[in-house]
Image 1 (cartoon, rainbow, N blue to C red):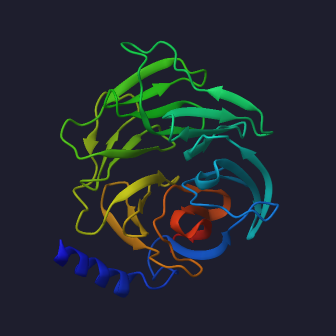
Image 2: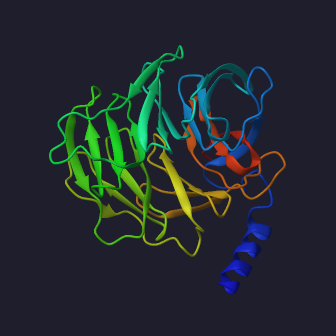
Image 3: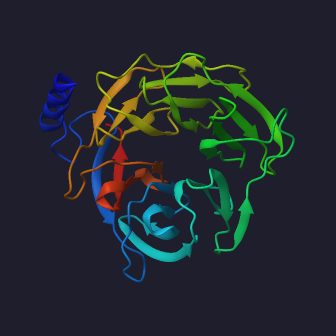
Amino acid sequence: MRRTYVVTAALWTLLWASPILAAGANSFRWVTSIYADSGGVGLKYPEGVACGEQIVVVADTGNNRLVRYSYDGPAVTAKASIPLGKASPIIIQLNSKGDSYFLDGRERRIDGYTASGERIGFLNPKGLPSSKDMVPKSFRIDRDDNIYILDIFSQSVILLAPDGQFSTKIPLPARHGFFSDLAVDRQGRIYVLDSVEAVVHSAAKGADHFTPLTGSMKEIMNFPVRLTVDDDGVLYLVDQNGSGLGLVAPDGSFLGRRLGLGWNKGGLYYPSQICLGADGAVFIADRNNSRVQMYTVAGD
């Protein structure tokens, strides 16, 4: 353990000191940091962030609320806040209408609010084949509003139609550490992230099983917990314990690390969810810095 720590610290010092990416594909540049709502109330340990069309919604976990922002280029403007009572939002997604759905870390249920702040209520899947018991670890909503749930109770990814009707489920690989997140690309391919083994598995649309996309990345990723995928099929893995990003090509090859540990502009400290917005905008919930970071990203 001591040797691993020393190597990790060396990597932080040598590779991640700058918040701007070194030359290479998918270069990141810091744009701004989001700290508060329209009334000046600061974010507190935000774990979730979701991107829509010129809209970003933050799961402000420590304050038990959702905060909605608009953005136009580098300008980010705070809009409405939605108090959630005792709910603890940890992952958030937007559907095509701009409605917000979040995973409540206390109840382990998915709850929803409209874009105007009216409560939709808990997601109640219909027609599950064997049991109504479900323990979501993460979820995604695709462009057609289909819902994908990483269910640690049934050890599978459950697919639901937009109305919540059960469609199918895909069992997770039998040999694994712990699955923490999933993503879906524009072709309907599903990716699941094993944080302990630092491995991504994938299943093409219509497939009934997952296969490894990558080998283990434990030597270069400390503990990846969240992922997303862009329109070119590049995966962005948030390395929580390593306070940075890892990029993976569509063929599973590792493209390198991006960003790094820090408290000044552009740095990350125990980051969580990531989302990709319009015009190359990237938002990351910078949890332990109690802010959301906005970057632009462009291929070289």
